[in-house]
Length: 304
Image (cartoon, rainbow, N blue to C red):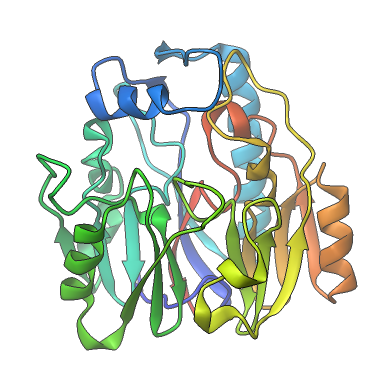
């Protein structure tokens, strides 16, 4: 397996994908519980096993995504999970930059060893870096999904799952080949970056108009072409939404001209088509219940 990726839109050649096998929310993860407590939602989140109907739909949608990617020549690596896990969103914990595979210092203890679910990476030609576990808020801490790869820049979104110490640690790991740029959306304390800001190609972004303005965009992106998302169609959820309706803009680029989008986001799909992108519309029915869209559930291993 070749490990090489520097952006979010080059031709996708291989990808990790999450799973709902043995899926269960943690019941003893202090940081997970703290995250739930900070939620703006009124209902308390479930813990432990998830309804079979939810997992059935999620598995069907992941399989449909897998089939589509493989039909487009993309190698898809799925994990085999034998014990309770919430490894649905492969991009959350594993950050692949260049040929470095970084297991990030996530605040969620229950997800600290997800790299072990993908043994194919251990035999690949790459540098594997396992971050030390954070023991306090002062220790380096971030999820991989706090980082957006923009060629020689790594846009690092500060939030309650990513601190400044994490950005310093990440810069030390990637060296001079990449510049880590810290950024925080002014209007919204986001957790992960990819329901707020995404790149479609080398100079086009999709931006959440509810959370961002042109003034609050990262400085180096202010002159990019912009597709502003004013609203998303909210997916239904089971008991508690682990993601807001904005997970609807969580898209996956297969190449600089082709983007996978949730089929119910008809306005966004039309905007992308008007901007000359080819759109592949697929279902992602449990994106809010399980907290991940197409970008979340995949982790790029190789892009051209």
